Structure formats: structure tokens, C-alpha cells
Length: 521
Image (cartoon, rainbow, N blue to C red; front, side, top):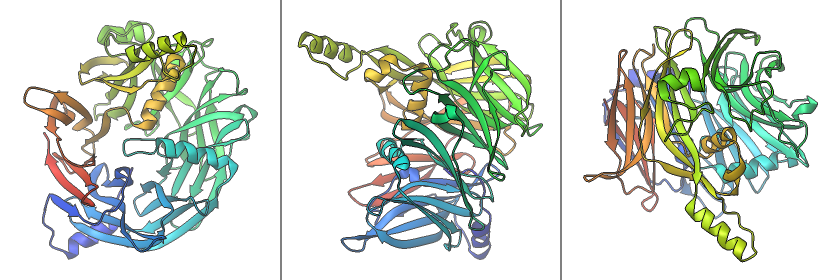
């Protein structure tokens, strides 16, 4: 999703044209689209426009027409970019870096991955094409399994005026690791980083964020495929010098640390990372964590401050967490977003998930055992539960916390759920998009902001999807929601200008996409 700024095309357009706030738009001849191939164009955390990519026509038996459409914040059209390509082309990812748009395409027939980078006036700036290899085939299989409108398993991210990077798992034989590719936008430049550490023969990397020169990753490593002795690492790779800058594994620290979320400290500009911490003897993907920790680091990876909040003592006083990090009725917590307000306090939104017995799974196991057969059905299932908002003081110690109930929904249920650790389950739930958290929007200075999420309600006067906000006005939190009942084939909600959200609805039968702005508090 787009994370940075747009000024050029939108500014010129607004100066040259009398624009009316129409709040609604219908786009016809949308033959096929992934709603996740749409995004917001932002300047200093404020909405300035949107982009959408979709199949707009079938030229002939072998060729399709594709359209990239750019809108302003009032849903007025700014630019349409159309091109033709063979029907085997599939858009996997899209991103925006403030001056260009990038698209990663897969061509199944030619067995290629192609990155195309466009300027905002529709000019094709650079094209990078790589053939499939045995290493990337595993990525393609994984991506096609998980790729959906709801999934958040993005692999392409902007790194400012340097261009874009992709973080991909690669596999060949028994070796399973990752690679980072950088694609230049202003000038043609490409490089690939593959870890050379022997321990990274079996490694899983997740993108956490970036600075003006660093890609920040959470990496789980192990040296033997058949053992479950993963170690957790916070890794910084300089995409300018093409070198690894730091690799923090906690071996020389008081605790082991597993990072989950990264942001920038608003006062110092340092890296602020949140995650769970463990005793030195623990297995970070198997054993329960001790609590929630916050580290601040400089660009060299030097840890400047540490703050620990134990589940039982510190978090327990506010939220009633157990020593294993579980809240009664809520389960474990997965952190989605951290917002630091002007007073230095940290506001954190998380979502609960828990493992519980599956009546259907148990029955199938019993029947299968009685018949002498095996089954993939699990005896347990994973349920996504409530939203939780926490406030931490300037030293990152918990001060307040509140649970916001919502409808619980089953995220997955298979034999995997019986044995996978809570940490691995959270990574999977996030990847396939089963969490209900949508996004966070607010003022540039973070004095006012809203945590936004989806829900499904069954009330006496309404049954269906709802969009919900937990809004902070600088002093206190409040809630709001809008009903989303629709006949659309699929829908998605994006941030919008202050006081609104933008709703996208795709009607497959009519080949139509409707966009509208809805007011929220």
C-alpha cells in the first residue's frame, strides 16, 4: 500500500482545473481487479489521492488491456494510464514512493517477474525483468496461495527516492532463506542481497519498516531444517551500501527479543521497535514470552534504551494478562500499529487471538480413528477476538489499557493449529488477512488519530459488516461505526480526507467499481 507523498501531478491538476468535491465515482468496464491493487497517495500522513489498477478490456484471445487510474482526494480523475499485455500477466504488488508508481507483474507463460516503474504523468521510467528460477518458484507458489484482497503479505515496499525493494522467500532443495532486491526509480539501478551466513540456510524474513538508508527485518533462523531451534533476529541492511549493518539476536543482552513493529521516535528520530522478550534459555517460536519490550536504536544498530513490561506484573495490573501473555476471553495480543503523540506517550493498537477446541475437528478425529484412517482436521482452531488499545508513558511503561469487544471469528482450523506456536500463528493470520484491523489515520502531528477495524454484527436492527473507529482527540478515546451492507462482490475501505473514509465496491457481474466517501466522527 502507498505510504508516502504525492505533490506533482495532483498539484498541477488542481491549479489548472476547477475541482468539485463529488464524493462518488463509478468506473465501468472493470473486467478483473484485486482491490488490494489500489492504494492511497499521501503527503505528511494526509490523503492527497488514490490509485487503482485493473483489467479494463479484452483485446483479443491472447491480449488484455490494463488501466492505472489516479484520483485526487475528492475522487476526481487526474490521470488514466492504459497499456496492453498478454493475458497471462498478473499484478502481484504495487507501491508508491512520492514521485513514481511501481508494479510487480508475473507472466506465467514466459516464466518472468517484471517490475515496471511509471512517473505520475504515465511515462514508463524503468523496467526490470527476471526469469523464474527454482529459488523463486517457492515464492510464487506461496504467493498464489495467500494472495487475496484481504491478505497483507506484501513483498514490495518503497524506499523514498532510491526506488523500491522486494523481500522474498527463496527455496532450493532443503535450503530455505530470503533475498532482497532493489529497483531504482529515478535512474536504472538494480541489486540483489542474499544472506551468506550459514545459519541462514533456513531463515524466514518479514519486512518491518525502513529508514532513509536501512531495510529493517525480523528474521527467524535455524541451522537444521528438522529442528525447531529458531533464533530471532532484528536485522538492518543498508540498501545504499548493499551491506548488513546489524544483526541483533539478544545473545549479549539480558533477554532474547523478538521484534514485531517498528516506528520512528518523534523526538529523537531514532528507531523505536516493539516486540516480545524471552528468557535466554527459551525457544522464541515455541515458549511463551515474558512480556512486551520497547527498544530504541540508532542507525548503527546500537541499543540506546530498553523498556520491559512483564505480562503478569506490569500488563496484568492494567489488562489482567497471565504470566504467559493471555487475557481471559481475548487470548494473546498481536500489535498492529504504534502512534507517538506530541507529549511523547505511545499509543498501541493490538488484536486478540486464541486457540480453542474445535468441536467439528474433534469429531472428525474420533471418527477417523475409529475407522483406522488419518485426517488433516485439527482438534483446535484459531479465533480472532477483540481489539485492545494501550497507552505507554514517555519511558514506554504501560499506563492505561482498554478492551474493545467485537465479534469473534475463526481464522483457521487444521492440524497445523494443534502444534504451531502462538508467534507462528500470528504471522500466518497477518499474512492471509484474517485480522480485522484495517488501518490508522490521523493528523500530521499525531495529536488526533483513529484506529480503524472491521466487524460483523447481528443486532436486532442490523445484520452485516461494519466499519469501526477508535478515535483519540488528544485527550480521550471515543468510538464510531458505519454499516456496510452491500450487494457488491467484494469491497475494501481506504483512509480518506479528515472525517471520512473511502469505500471501494466491485460488482463482478456488472464489471463496475463504485467509489464513495463516507463521513465518520
